[in-house]
Length: 275
Image (cartoon, one colour):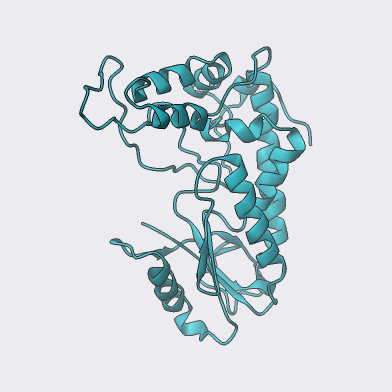
């Protein structure tokens, strides 16, 4: 497959497997707002810089692993109860068609529709296809990103400025941290591209650290994040990345990949999210 590097020529946004919904904004302090001595510092926020695609797939998807003895008729309730024990939520969890599934063997699948399902036994879920699709989507984004940022120097990820702010919030306020991050030419190039109405896809600020590794590394991240999404609940333990830092994400993917690869084909997976 060949990728068109003139990314502004695509007539419509590509629909990627990692969705288009991100974390809720926290609000950005005004640029001229100073932190007075004795007052608590404002939290660092990227709400005005972030794109609505986190490094992991869409907002709040958690995959729950259930034993084969789980009654298929109560699969959704069993997954919801297990997740509520791990993450008490004020809003109810709902099923989401996260998985690629068989179009022909739908018996045992949860809410199947046009090759997608909210859950079912591993043997009926095409996890390999999900991973390949995720890898292809990330490969396409990396090719587009490379063309957009050509000629710019590597940029520091936002957590570098956030850490500096936390070490000395009064001398280095949140507004300065956000401004220093956004003024980097590579970040500015990504933001300018994201403003274009005919962009092929968004280039998320939260992907910067991963994009700056290599094509193959970024592609493998897309491959590995396709199935576990934002969290994996297994044997009563909830695995999550913890942050957008690449090191945290890779640790999460190492754990979840080893768990998913070792699951028996009779294990039932259910995908839940917030409405």
